[in-house]
Length: 400
Ligand SMILES: *[C@@H]1O[C@H](CO)[C@@H](O)[C@H](O)[C@H]1NC(C)=O
Ligand SMILES: *[C@@H]1O[C@H](CO)[C@@H](O)[C@H](O)[C@H]1NC(C)=O
Ligand SMILES: *[C@@H]1O[C@H](CO)[C@@H](O)[C@H](O)[C@H]1NC(C)=O
Ligand SMILES: *[C@@H]1O[C@H](CO)[C@@H](O)[C@H](O)[C@H]1NC(C)=O
Image 1 (tube, rainbow, N blue to C red):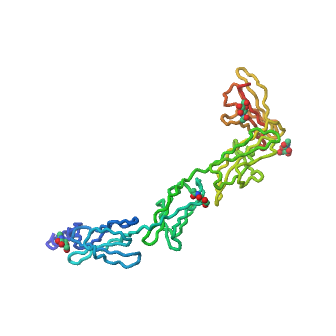
Image 2: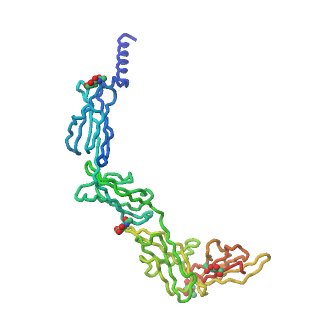
Image 3: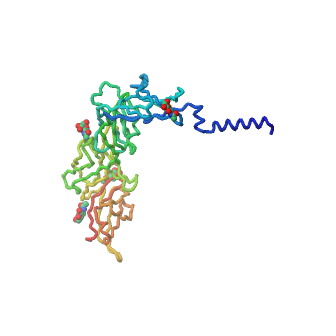
């Protein structure tokens, strides 16, 4: 290594140590920035806030303060506060600060602190429709009113926080709502450096899709009597209309499935009751409810039955005599009529009838054991592939 190279290396070493992050050295070369806290604040009515200004690193800085009365207006020095590291302000405005050294150098200006005041106005939040519950995939609108604030160009802040984006309309509609729309809703007006008080809180809880409960009375058809269907739902008067259907056995789809056919004048009824006259055979009914601008429907209710004890030719259920075989007694239920394919149904549905189906001659036979459990007691009937219900029989096996 020759002498000149040695000198170059020494020079590089000295230069490197000078810039090696030693703050004292650094601020000899770089202009520091003043830091002002807090950067945003809402003054309560009659309240004040302490602003503090600091300059990073060492050095003897004199703090200078500035303020502007509104967005876009000129910044004026606040000479009365010169040299104070913290000041108390009770006026809305944009505030900033910087440092000045003995030698007359200046730091960079701080960011502007946005200090807003509070107007003696409370925003009013309303919700439409104002139903007790809102269900999954319904829609609702919240609306923010500023009393006495007509003719003024407000923007609106919203809660929950995720909606607090700058908004210039006072209405927000949420379509096809889901769990993420749950929350406590609130709003306030925001204009220049003034805010209103936050509005009342409207809690919104999105509920699961509803399933109404249908009741049919009486359960057994009596000749000439009418049958009353009643569709029950929570808060039935909150905008619901009701739809009424006849359930038709559909053996094509799957076990125990039905197709639904609207009853005459059975759509968009305002009543929770539907009266049927002239029904002579066993039948099943279903209801559901609908409301709202975007046609929100509930689930269909479970099918409910009105049973007829009268035999008729298209579909019949007959119960045979008690037969004996070695150690057990049993009865045969026979479905017969204008169909080759049947299924046997039972109410209550706490047990499934055991059926050894015989397809020939349009018959299907079920075997019920008479010493079986009490859960086999119940009302039995047949449903055919040709969409018919048989008469129904109330069987108490224990008594046989
Ligand atoms: C800082 O500056 C002020 C005013 O210029 C002076 O009175 C004070 O002695 C200085 N302090 C130091 C440590 O230099
Ligand atoms: C719901 O709205 C109706 C009419 O818009 C209004 O009369 C009623 O007071 C409101 N109820 C609530 C709890 O806001
Ligand atoms: C039996 O079914 C056939 C064909 O589906 C139909 O034409 C006939 O009217 C039915 N008879 C009765 C008694 O329902
Ligand atoms: C079936 O008959 C039993 C005994 O008489 C009675 O307790 C029960 O309520 C009846 N079931 C129906 C659905 O009518």
